[in-house]
Amino acid sequence: EKSIVIIVDCSLVLGIDSSAAQAIAKLKDTLLKTHLIDLFVFVTGNQFGFPTQFPLTEKLSTKGHPNLSVQNDVVDEATALLRKDRGSNDKFTGSHVSSSLDEALAYAEDALIFRIDPSLLEEDNAGMQLSNSEREMEDADLAKIYLRKVCPIEIADGDLETLISLFKREVWKNGDFLWRQHAESDCAKLVVTGVLVAELENEAGTTEAVFPGNLVGELGLLNRDARMSSVKCVSAESVVYSLSRSAFDDLATTNPSLARYIDLICIKYLALRVQHVSNRIFETRCLPI
Image (cartoon, rainbow, N blue to C red; front, side):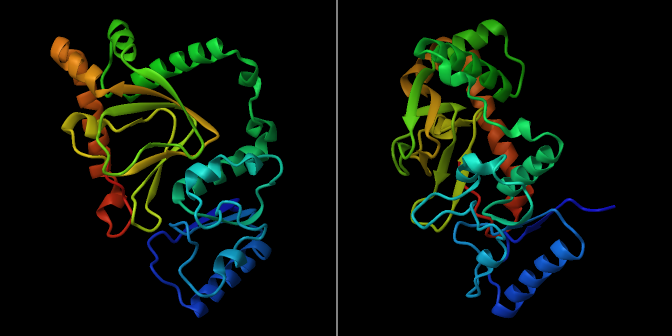
C-alpha cells in the first residue's frame, strides 16, 4: 500500500556529519521520486535547523522551509501553525522541515484533510463581524467549556459558574509577555483564543506552545514559587481568563472544595509530564511548569 506522508523525527539527534547529511538529502529525493511519496516531513527538534555544516535544512525543503523562521523569532509549533499559508496555497507535497514533532503531526494531518476536502482548511472569518460585547460573550462561553474540559473530575454547573466568575478576561497582543521568568507567581491563566509560548531564558531553543484550552501558571499560583519560564503571546491576539492570587486565596478560605479543582488540575498536569515518555529521555528540552 502506498504511503502518503512520512515523518522522520530527528529531535534526539545531537550532531550530523556532512556525509550523513548528504545521504539524508539523497534519501529524501529517492523516496519522493521512486516511491512517489506525497509529503516528506523532517523534524529538527529545535529552532536552528539541523546540527550540521551541510545546508540540510534547505536541501530538505523543496518549497523553502516556511515552518522555520529567522533568528530572533520564536520558532515552534505555535508560530508554524499560525501561518496563513498552511491551507490552499500549499498543496502539501514535496519535502518540508518542522521544528517539532507536534507541528509535523499537525502539518501531516492537514495534508490528509486537504486530500479529502481543501475547504476544511479555510479560515473561518465569521467571528470577524462580531461586536466587542458579542466577542466577550463568546469568549466567556468558550472559557467555561475549556475550564470544564481541563478539570480532571466532573464539575457541577453551579460550581463551574462560580469558579469562572473569579477569572478576569484579558487580551494580549503579539509579542506581549504575560510574565517573565523569575517573576512573582501571582495568577494562573486559562487560554481561550490565540497561542502562547513558554520559553526558558538563557537556554537555546527551549520552548513549548500553549494552545487554547490549557491553564498556565497554576503551579506557581499554588506553591508561590517564582515563574520558571517566560510566557509570551505569539498570535496576533490572545484572549486569556486570569485567576489572581487574591481571588484564589479568598476562594481557598471561603470555599475550599471549589478551590480543590485548581489543585486537581495542577496534579493532572504534573502527572502527564511525569508519565510522558519523552520526559524520560535525556536532553529532550522538556520545560518545567
